[in-house]
Length: 388
Image (cartoon, rainbow, N blue to C red):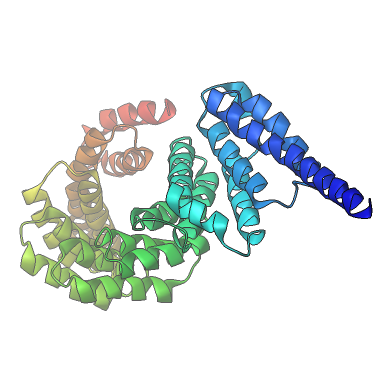
């Protein structure tokens, strides 16, 4: 009788466990039928019962249900889980931890579970990026990277996910998180020069100019003949007032593309930074000859002539002789007059720019006694400024 009693107890325990695992089986069946809400009800019961709550199959099934909820077009099913893919990943990891013998791991590999989950995270990342939820997109792509590193991931890792993660972090202004991923892209030779540029800009955003320079120099080392790399270096050195370095790379760029108007413009700006206005004018004129419809070039030419005229007037004020002073002042006014056509052209190219109009207003007022026609132009310019 004792043996019979023990047998009955053993059978009862087995049937009890089977009953609770039956909830997991029911959840799977409901999923197959597309009744995800009923599947969750069944699975919730299995997750709180001590007979099934520590069974790896329970969590494996939950992971599948979470993924199905994510992919569903039904808003009711979509809302079954707050973060379905993250919960899926947590469930799968729990299943693995409860499976020391490795039977679930074989299922992962046979079903390409992590490959499919990674794809879902990529889809979610793309959706969030499109919605400009860059932090959310970064988190999704970061999960995809983590999953692809698993030994249960079947297939080759898509190197594009590193760039997607980097770009999401960059757009979300998470620069320190973006940098390691841009470095990974560089190691993988993905997207050629772009990761170098974005890495440099990320460093600049956190005021780390030393590493920004290293990133651009790294690009130049690999792509020494790439004009975009050279121009990025010119721009970097210009912005950081390392003018000799800027001239060095600018001359290199001009040797490869002598008729590029923007290079002559950049050279003119470098001379302007040094207050070498005659040299700047030569460069800017060359740029205008190559392409005359650029606001910045026309505006800078006007600035050069204006500043030259100011210098001439300062020198004239030191002259004591009335006649010589008059001659020097006239010379300065002629240089002021030379600035006007360039500011006028700049204003025509960008009518809403207030700076060009303000400069014209001042010049017309200053020179109205020299050229009476400037009186009317002064009044016209004042009306334009009042309307802004």
